[in-house]
Image (cartoon, helix red, strand yellow):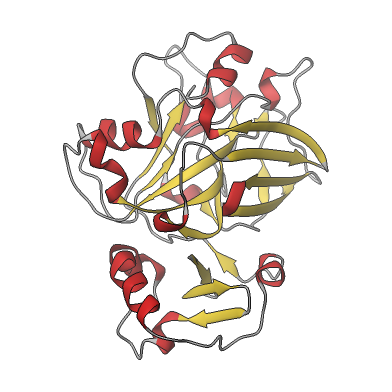
Length: 285
């Protein structure tokens, strides 16, 4: 199931059109995507037991380019990210494979929709295609074997990074360098966990101005989704709606010779398997 934020309302995206969730359920389920997240499993069960016709004939391809889509979670309590979490990315950067997840935060003010423009603040702004996990159930000390039960679904994300600030000072400033305005676009919708057979086997691709920059698979991840969720919960209490950027594969701009960084006028297209595509134009900051 695909659930999107369409003009601020939780909406099911079907091949035949759009279904406004609150209207279809006569208010039994919220129109707010954030409030719907903890109810995903209950909603899917209800939706499977009834027949609901689309109330808007707009197709998935039409809605993707409409400019109506907002972030699949609007106000997450926490946005986590995992660095150097792909074997191929670690190799291209000359980094040792981490022995435990390298975690940092992206601040919530960096969150953006799937078609939002990305203001470019410097000459060293980079792209990183990432699978984003959306937490559906909160908790601490979640065993790895049960971790996927706490996931509401998945979406496509870009961990846009300003490399100069990221590495400024004796202690790298990862969170600051990755939290400029619109540096965390996600979407185009939430694909529920029940619709993703294996989150650890999804193709990941990023195109810049039509040229393929990244082309890999989540199978290259050092720590898989279950391990990441379990590890985070061993320290923090995960909350419904929390987002986890799970790392980026090889092909990032900084890892190229010569480096390739984003400039105003560039167009980023990021795709992950069955999850869809987000498209972001780069603009002057």
